Length: 201
Image (cartoon, rainbow, N blue to C red; front, side, top):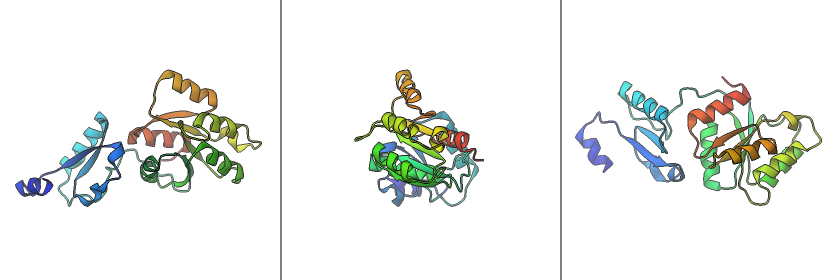
């Protein structure tokens, strides 16, 4: 199908729209000009369309279009807490675009242990999934805030969840979380949160 479309015109631009859960499949083998992650946001669509319209250069080899406000967070360290391997892989890919160092924890209990055993101020930001086995994100955050060390009082902890209801956000705030980001990630929202809490430019 793709080869047939390419034969119609050598200058034809082709974007692939794909769901977040299918992102890690074998689409790397195909030469798409851009990738749109569903559900589609108007800002991302406009950005990709403008980029595809403005350039006639060789097709990009990157899976993800670059974001206009992509921060440079080199030297910062982020703890990513996620129990789903696929979600972990995708989140690492997206957050890694900022240049930040990423450490992983597969559940709340593992995150608590890593923070408790790390030197003070080792982590600059934590992305905390909410629904996890052993210790969920709410309880993990409460336990982290209760550790007998100064850095955990001001350590930014951002909730990651598919739910965006007011009750969920209220629970996050009560647990001691600083911000909320919905899954699947919207790149501009993700980068805005990282920029705000890490002061990256």
